[in-house]
Each structure stands twice: as structure tokens, then as C-alpha cells.
Length: 411
Image (cartoon, rainbow, N blue to C red; front, side):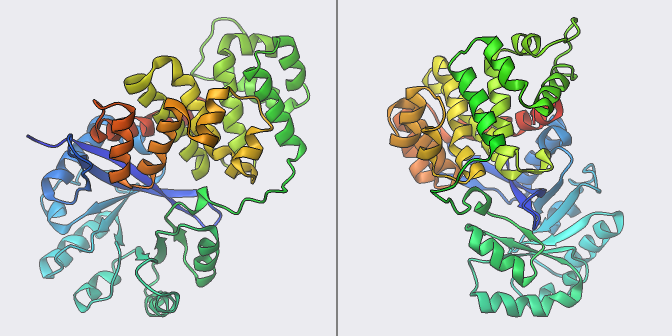
């Protein structure tokens, strides 16, 4: 039986923590086990490229660069011909066989306008011809000591390529590798900045949280409008949102009350939550933390609908997003939740891992850490009929949802 292939992605981040591009991850899963593999073979790459062509490049990736893992044989077979060369970085896998034929093929694609990256680079003489062709070199910082990494950068800096630090997991490591001269970074450090327990929220955050609380408590729409009027810029953004392409209402919007009524409490509440997440960023569409929160929320919502309970779906979305809001505001999750009005089910799920929502939250932690053995066990606890292949499909759909959300002006 042919295994289904799914598309995932991991942000590649600039030194200011904005999104530069994405590494595209091609995954397959065994329906009956915890086996999830990143696929590298010829047929798997063909399957994924076909999916990208079918779904549309922008639907999955927006306007960012895409780093696609590839081997020279794939290029030779002509599978990448239709990819937009100005948006693609061909990432040559470290497992590739590099001979004269492979160098010739890569040279040809470089001439056509594709950018070239070397993945998990380890110096070897056979790779020497590719260094002059490469725009990016990736170094797995877990493979080397910090001194070895310094020495490698000294050797490579004369080639003029950009350096990407892979598997950067802590904010302090991000700062260190940035100081060494790395240009780009990959890993989950942006979800784990230092959390200061004594942090005080500034007035903007307090107002946003008060508005969010008002929606969660189903306050009178007049009371909510009063809170909005304390932030003219927020009123403008709300009216811009309601008049965007996504909401083509016949009536002209003339008040905050009308806008809220047309959008609905749940939609405006979600929108406020995204603003809380992104309020310190100048470019919402390049905020990796915001993206992670939207994807996590959407995945938890869809998993709930498919395998737990449709009645819990909205709570699952909020739980997913809230689980990263504390990182944005710089405080422990419990302290944040003590300041806002959320359903008891959400609170107990995030703080105590209670109930079905708590089980789902635990599963998401395992899945997003790529601990697929633990994720498989957690998923079976949620629903024995669910398989990791289902989750990979939900993850792929969440990426398309995120790009759609960006276009509506929600963030």
C-alpha cells in the first residue's frame, strides 16, 4: 500500500526573530504505529512536489522563501522544473552522492536562478565544488562544540554565503550564535524566551486583556464598545477587518457595535488574542510565535472536531493559542491565566493537564517536539481510532489555513 505524504514546515528566522523562509518537511506515517519519517527518496519527493503544484505554492507557503530538501537525482529527473525559482532554495541533502555529474546538475539549476543551500554541512573534499555555488550553508549546532563551530565559520566565511544555525533550542544559544556571525536560525528558541515572573503588563496589554476578558464573560456589547473606544487604532483595525475582502457585507459599517455583531463574539475574541500575541511586532506576517500559536490552535480545534467532541472545538482553539500567549507577554502561563477570564476547562487543561482537552494539550507537546513515540501513545489515549497520519494531514491543512488568515487581515 502506498504511504501518503504530508507537508510540514519549520520557520527559518532572521536575527531580529522575523520569518525569513521555511524549510519544507516531507513526512509519511505508518497508520498502525508511531513511525513517522522525513522522506528523502525520489518517489516521495515527486509525490510532495505534485501536492505543492496541486494545492498551490502560495496556499502553503505565502510569500516567503521555501527551502526544499532535495538530491541531485531529483533535479536530473526534471521534477523541480515548475517551481518558482525566485521563491525556492534547493537544499542539497548531506546524504547526496556528490560527483562530477551531480555538480554539473546543480550548476545548471544555479544558472537558471535557483538558490542553493547545503544541509547539515560537514566539510569533505568532494563537497568543495559546491561551496562556490552555495548561497546558504546549514550547520547543526548540536553536532559540534562551540569552538568547532567558530573554526568552521572562519573556514567558510570567504565563500560569501549566509550561515544558518540549525537546532537552536534556547534563546541564550540564539544570542550566542548570532554573536558568532550566523545570519539565520532554525529551531524552537523563539517559543522559549526567558520568562520573568515579576513582569508587569504595559497599558496596551492590559487593555487588550480586558477586551478579551469581556468577550469571554459575554459582557454587553455596549460595555465592549466602550473598551474599544479607549484604543482608536484598534477601532480602525476592526473596521478595516470588517471591510476586508473576507467579509463582504452589503451594509456599510458605521459603528464598533455593528462590526462586532456581524463578526460575532468568537471571531473578534480570536482576533484580539492574535493581537495580544503580535502586539510587540512591527510585521505581524513575519512573527514565528504568532504563526506557531495559530497553527497550534487550529490543529487542536480540528483534532477535537474529528476525534474528541465538536462542542470542545472552540475551547481547544483558544487553549492552543493561549499556551503561547504567555511567551509573548513574558510571564509564566499560570500567572497569565490568573489575569484573564477563561473557561475552567481551558484553565485545568493548560495548568493541570486535566480532561480530554488536557490530554490533547499533552499530545500537542509531544507532536510538536517530534517525539512521535510519546505522541502516538497520547493520541491512542485520546481516541484509539486516530492515527498519526490523520494528524499530519491536519497539520498540513493548518498551514493552508494560516496563509488564508494572513490574507484576511486577521493578523
